[in-house]
Length: 486
Ligand code: GLN
Image (cartoon, rainbow, N blue to C red):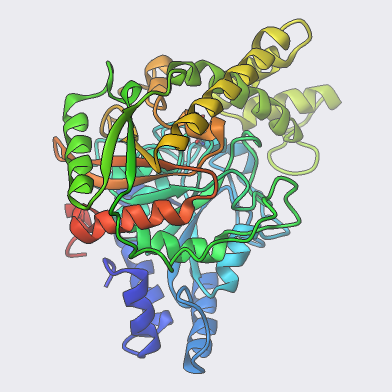
């Protein structure tokens, strides 16, 4: 049951082969049994889940609801959920119970889905391995000694292990795609502005974007039907009608033009990962696509420019955590300044503190032009590379990450090696275009994700391309051993 698609489960719920309460209990039992090994949840909201499931069952009884009605899902713990603890993976918010609901979680709830709980993540979404969480590292279900990727590693591990049918994630520089790749699931980072950021705890506001993480492109499409769309509560939300993400999934790929950026296949890419990606590309040729080499010449500059822009925005966003209104406050402050300083020193972990310092420096007078402004200029060049390439091709393909999942602890003392993991994902956020990670095979027993990038608001196209691939391959149907037989 835990391996089935949203469409199949929705049919079973409608035919009364199973009730949502039964399905929810099944997933809660799997979480209780398997999550002690993975640590993918920070909070399991059992009571809320069972109440929502009962409501869903009543709706289903009367033949109402959507394809998500009664389906158990999980949310990354940076989406504010009214009345349910929302920590953002940080000690700073260890006691934060939001008085309001994020637009994403509220829309998914309105569509009738059941919230099983809140998933573990790198603190304030800063990381590529999920080792920066105050709640401890998450383990990869394919190999418990490996990282699940970050920062949405809890969501990825939970879906891969069948602890939730689907989940939400957020992607500022790769945090949906890279953990999806490392855990062998499907993830979509939509166009900036397509999914509302209201109620998402901000990391870098000009880059952050929420999206679906699920087993298949079709399941992601079901979630997008609920999540996407204009929201007047988010000033950067795109006031543009959404597509029907399910309508064109089956369109044939004949004549699809695929671009392969030569910079994505250079030094640093694990040859075994490259082999998997090239076999996937061959599969697309068999489905009628044509392939051509393209160039994204400023790719190398994406790391330095992202690691100036993201910390700059973070330093500003995180200034609201001062111990006054919400979150952690130090004991016995001597005066106001002491309260600010100790609350922040105690509440934030090392990576977050490091980025606040880098960002504050880059934004300070005398350095702003040299760092922040320069990084923004590079960002424009990166965007123009994509715009130019996408005039020639329909989609761009390449790896999501240079390697498969790496060992827990193996990169924690080497920030440069850790930041290099993001080389193929950051530029997409800097440009604001949508991109997916799709399971495409294995290297040394660990999953490899194919990245598919597209033009602004081409989510429906990306889902169609990924779905067609998944109709002809079964990489997305593989289940890690630890998840079987439970
Ligand atoms: N790894 C990147 C970072 O640490 C991206 C994280 C993200 O997308 N939230 O900033």
